[in-house]
Image (tube, rainbow over the protein chains, first blue to last red):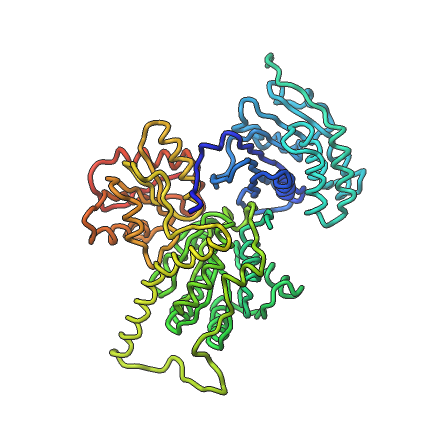
Length: 202
Length: 382
């Protein structure tokens, strides 16, 4: 029997939680990230929060990455990385809930990570994914589809996957305008700004 | 070739690999993507089956029954209320000895409306004469779909494959999709000895008196009992070709366990992580996953339980007024055994409650400290 194994090897597990609004592509982002890690030979899980999906409503999606098979089928409550596709969600959703002590928050925002309220004591990264997506014609100006941009920023800020793996995953999965999505991804990789956790939380 | 696949798409791939002749299904959340994907695959020519659109699940299973009687390999998929609407045909297709394979994505039954995982839908069909197999991950879903055709066609008993709503159906995982030439070696074409054929007329489903009726039921009962051995034989043959083996039960750290958690479906994997954590705390826990529910693999479970004094059954289902269904089956199975552990039935996770490793560990702690035999189920909120 291919003997099932348990949690002994879960020390290397990476858990990522995406926050977005219905229609922004959070679920696809979690799926593309899983594909990128899979292309690097790792085990992955990608799934949405099991709710009722409505355009514009807050949604969550999750990705797990591990070198060994993944046995945990619960949702993610203590992520290593939180990705916020829409900064306005931070007023209504506690996006950092459960974030690991040394975790990272990545936000789609026009401001730098140090200027985002609530993230002072955390390691954070920010990228203007909305502007990059709009410039590449992804979605509309009022409803840009930011998922491929934010994944470029994720590759740089977290180091969990290589940029070229994300590009490969986009080319494999995104059937609509893959070229523009790859370009946006690469631009966001260059544009992302990062800050360390500040010990002084005043 | 390894791919990242949704559970629902793993089913669709398996159906194409099994060279199914006829598919008839009606969409229902969370099974819908199986039907959509298969209908597109049939339209593109990636699946050679004839896809019959119908107006209800009752008709879907009736179509499969007719096609199967005519000698076709058939497939359907449903969930929850769709399964319940099929109920009459579920009995009939088993009585007619049509080896249909059905995937049921288990989902809670309304009211109140709830789309999430619960096993009460499939378990409420336990007396219909179908074999039932419960799956833990998307690889097992794909592989078990192929197993299911071998088991069904050898025994002429339909097989229901059960997978958790969303936790598998809408979750992408790495799945090794086998080559169709390899699948052909494992699963030969379906060639029944007797089939509906205008050139060679037979009568099917005639009226009988009690004596013949009971005898036919006894024969069916014997056939289903043989599924324990046949499932293991098929599993071994599959392993020889594909290098993956599942058994009908899967023990994990049970050998010296004082407390064994009996689980099924996706809960089994999460329970293994809980068991590792419990062991680190010094609690001698193990877990036993049950894949085959009907026929109930009593002896395989007893072997897995061994000398353990206590078994806690985690049931994501309930027979109201009786308790969790796996727990009832287990208690009945152990009544005739020499060594009988204390059995605690736990009802939890109904309507999609999330079994985290921490929640399962808490349930295990409560079960470990419970004293004395009890008939009543323990309800654990998540």
